[in-house]
Length: 266
Image (cartoon, rainbow, N blue to C red; front, side, top):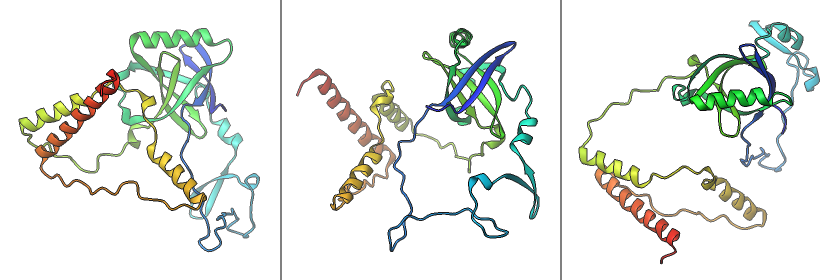
């Protein structure tokens, strides 16, 4: 796995050299764009708007448009020169309780892996954070952006979570009115939640649509037709209490089937 970012966690005078590795993988099926007639793949070319010649990545530089049609060139050397020593480290600014960081700010996750020789300092930080149920709030420059980070301790190591800044979070598009609820409806909803509550096990969940998509692609490759998998009419339950009752009945039946599978009874 390629390292996404290299740096050193800076905690006071303690430096912990680490590599950041992406914590997620892309398993989605990706389609290519084809010409409708020939079925040939659509290609895009990069070309100069001034002379029309095609250019390669080696011919492309960065420029900032400060006036319409006027650009100032910024080289990699220019960008490197404006970085401070602090920018080149993962500089811890403060610590906070885990629950204080609203999940809406989370952007991407990375594994923080210590360099050889930094394992003890890394483990010291991990254990100290975990024992106090706290996270470290830090900053570093990645590419041309200063990233706000959370260093999140786990039993296995430390996860680095990049955060959105406060001004990057959009307001809710509209205010949701606080409706007056019937107590029976609320109790029924609580019962439904209770019936459907169990420990979260990530391994139990898979992308079922992607599995059906792969199966459909294979069928088309083999010249078979794709048959609609869900032809049942949608339920038009409008009454909230009726919908809750039906949902509760379904959850109880599902729970009974699960119990039978566990006990091996028919």
